[in-house]
Amino acid sequence: MNTVWIVMPILIVLMFLLGTDLNRQAFANVARNPKGVLVGMLGQLVVLPVIAFAIAWVLDLPAVYFMGLVLVACCPGGSSSNVFSMLAKGDVALSVTLTAVSSVVTLFTLPLIMGAVSAFVSQQAGVEVVLPVGKLIVQNLVLLFVPMLAGIALRHYKPAVAAKVNKVLGKCAFPALMVLAGVFFLQYTQEIFDNFSVLGIAAAALILGAMLCSSLLSRFGGFSDAVRRTIVIEVGMQNAAQAIAIASSPFIFNSGEMAIPAIIYALLMNVILLAYVAAIRKK
Image (cartoon, rainbow, N blue to C red; front, top):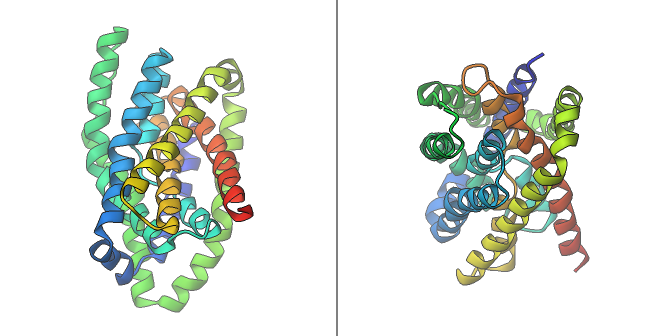
């Protein structure tokens, strides 16, 4: 069974959920707080892929895992980041805005970065890795942009209904991701066990490196504590479901192995960010 047929509906639901969180105020926040949005985007679109590439290169990861790790870093922020920002007493409006903006911008940046990485890996490993850019863009539009627009439309025309739907889906999002991780783990148990040591180190280094760099960026920006926490969480939490969908999609890479870094990343991401939130709340 190809897990993509499980991850795609989950990804659609998550993006629809994000859409129901958005209103005019969320987008107006870009104009009101452009500095915070720009720093958050710099961390997600530039710093994170560079960190992932450096880690994969230093650890000399096999081509399929090299691609998988960088793929996670190229994806937009995960919808769970909004909940984590709320728990960490961050700027929730900025969190929602960053997630939405990154979901749109990465429609264009992800193919560009992954195209360059595919060429690099093909040259270094001597194995041709082909990225069907057109199919990738179409799949991302269908799985990300369209559901998000549908959620925005529902909130605009039926705000009461959107609020009820958001409340229900918000409770289902995390369990759905855990079910996905469980199914994927059962399907690739041996591969995960065989590579968990090196991929666990790679994923943890990516998360911690992203949090550290984004914290430094936000401190240089002179932001409030709430904004700094939000940027750290947004850059540290990527949409692993999208990375799994792209890696395992029969229309793109059709590789379950390439999705393994995203699964390990998703598990460690929640553990590390929960510890971060707990430390903030205790402080």
